[in-house]
Length: 114
Image (tube, rainbow, N blue to C red; front, side, top):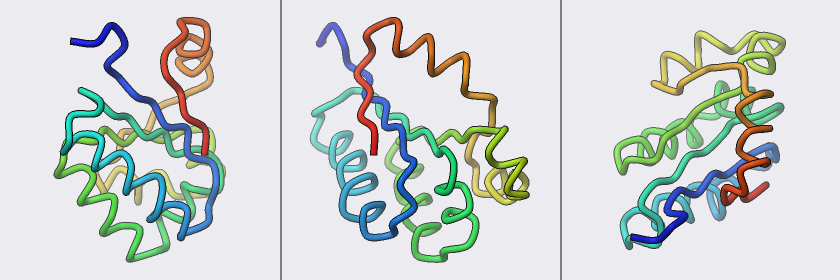
């Protein structure tokens, strides 16, 4: 097993093409092909609204969850955008991410920012 086997993707870009062709394509394939043992997508900012409103993105969220990608969202963002319940209904974990993100950065975890 690799020393660092967990990929974190900080997803802040609300472009649906970027979501489909990078965020979900990469994380789903990373698990299918064993490039990473774990993959977590952190939904932050405008992406929370995109996930709440875009049916195609919601299909990708479900596919990712079915493949074992962990999806989690910033509660402060989702509360401010009024979409917390919608995200939770899609089985996305919603938590305050400020402190955990800081710990990830300080730990040297692999974090890809999109």
